[in-house]
Length: 426
Image 1 (cartoon, rainbow, N blue to C red):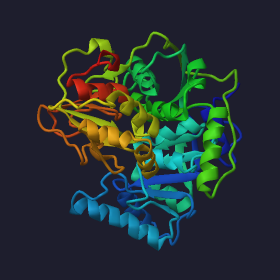
Image 2: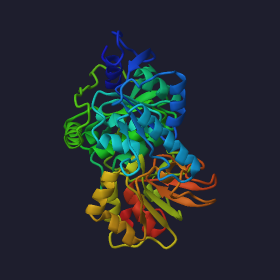
Image 3: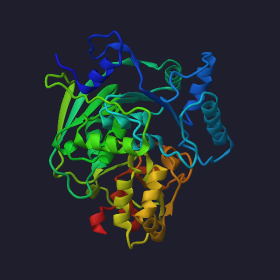
Image 4: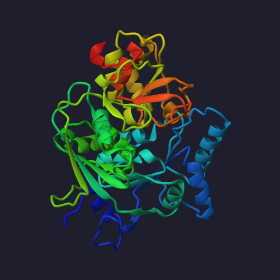
């Protein structure tokens, strides 16, 4: 019996295990572990209670205070300080302070830290983003992060795998965000619970790494343990370019792919050639509808950014829609690049100027309003269109506010029109 790519990576990281099957429990070696300013303080407290004098590897622990910096209040300042003090005390090589940091799931890929074949855990549910590199990456709790920081291991259950096959050439304005929203609307928010989502097919083969990262980022919104894409030439070029530019401590990787006789719990096929851009209506990412069916929705705020769609290609797409246009007087436009490098490139390419001249604001890298943190919280009854990944009740502010998820082009067009609209209708 063959194995999926996820099973192969888990087997390779489970010393002494010779065979692996879905449902098995393993003690796996981790290549890197990640925490942020919300989850790490809890993990650090647990780590100290273990009485350890050092972390398992100073180059393999990553701390990114991306949710609340610049600090919005005393509590968030204290959270960030806990990370900074711990990084100094235990000589953590990869701690990223304000001015250097970015949204964790954009920063690590950009710097070449994630390699094909890796096993990565992070105390953040969207750690599944990194599966776009042909790595196993999953979110865990803060206590799991504490144990991994101490011993370099994590307890895991081997997931079953659902294969999602995408075929056909997407239309203009349709990208990774639309593909994954379409799939989640089919699967439901628990349809892949504790399973691996393996994205494949001719459509995936031609997607950029940024679109692939978007798709794997939202695997968790279907309940998946991880999202993963077999690495190819596009993957290797991205990795090699990042390694060459940033020179991370690890550069050796291994390419895995699923066997032809691998067993899947489900296989679903989507022909995307006729797919419209998809908008997920409140209050679930699974409430996806073609944008043409979303009519007369008045918008108060538009947010373009996050670990889902805050990369340079996303900002380029939004700027193309907004160039020489003005944001509707009744709409607040907030654009948040995911990293400092993306920020600088957006300035260099003129995208930042487009946003500001249109009447929007161009902010420092942060998770910001995505989780209801800061830099754009919604009031009662307000409606937002966001390129983020979740639109749960109260996710971006007041429990009686409303969040619609969409790609950057739809978000930008909606900022101009004042209602949700396809960019071709402007």
